[in-house]
Image 1 (cartoon, rainbow, N blue to C red):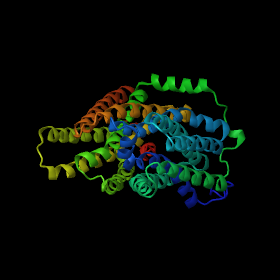
Image 2 (cartoon, helix red, strand yellow):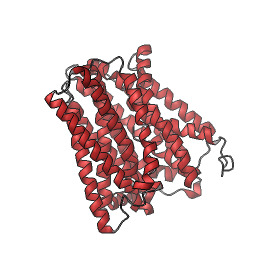
Image 3 (cartoon, helix red, strand yellow):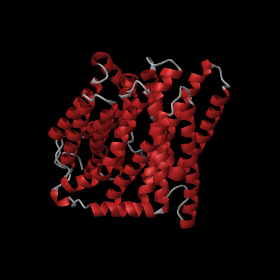
Image 4 (tube, helix red, strand yellow):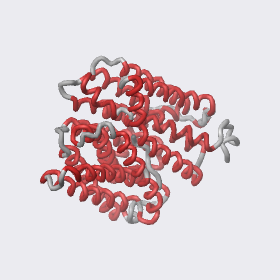
Length: 426
């Protein structure tokens, strides 16, 4: 059934573009801040410029906390009202960050921004489910995810352009403009996709019960932890990457272009995963990806510790390392989310909110202290990512044992459609 037949004003192409733009709010809110970190550190935290990284993890923390309730609230009050409420919270946080006189005030404002950003992150997926199902939904989701995966490549360039034109604080006004355009577009062109008879009352007790059930299910619990580690790897890279280019390799001016190149190349990981997951299964692919990333990161760590490469080769080595972290995220996070959801079909909506919230908050809590350890070398970043990759790999081996005990199909459940996509992260 087409969107027009469902009472909507827009066609499929416009709908995909709208959903992709709402997804892109997350990437824009994180990656466009990267070029501003040196200026934020110099102005608001001159005694410890590493603390400027916290504007990224504070946003992620707020987004994770907001994810707990955004889905259930949209089930109770409708998709569009929750999107509107999230936009208001997001804009308030952006304005507060724009005028923040201290780093502490800015961090609080970024948490508020993250709370508001949880709405487009969660509700956009719910809208997709409301209007489509089966293979049509999967195809449209894949297209939207491709747009979402490519957008982070250009976010630092947008941030750099804004800084050149109006200064680093102007990025927060860019967030406001971006959100207002998306909300106005959604408000004018999309009719409420969740009718009143289909809504369910918001019951906090049910959310608590869903969280308890997830935590009591051993395989789901382990999968959420692994997902948190994988997100922690990518957030650790993102929080420290600008300083690495600036301080270690003296390439601050060209950083947005290198970042864009790596991001575009790494976007292929989700497509590769979609092709091979049906054959090999979600668990196998995730285990292999984490194992290979762990071995590669160990090799990079050894080279860094013993200074085995001349300076002219260290930058290409880092580019390969950065790409590997992004590629690993594309090959694991969607599979892990599907694995965690598979036994929770009876509470799918609640489970999606809890899984997304727990893994995101965990990642923020891990990445923030690692970022503060930056000492002008690659050691803190590479060491932190090595520990997370190794931990995730060992937990995946543990999940394999649990699957065999439960008599599940080798490779990770069905290994089919559920693992063929990639969940939006940053």
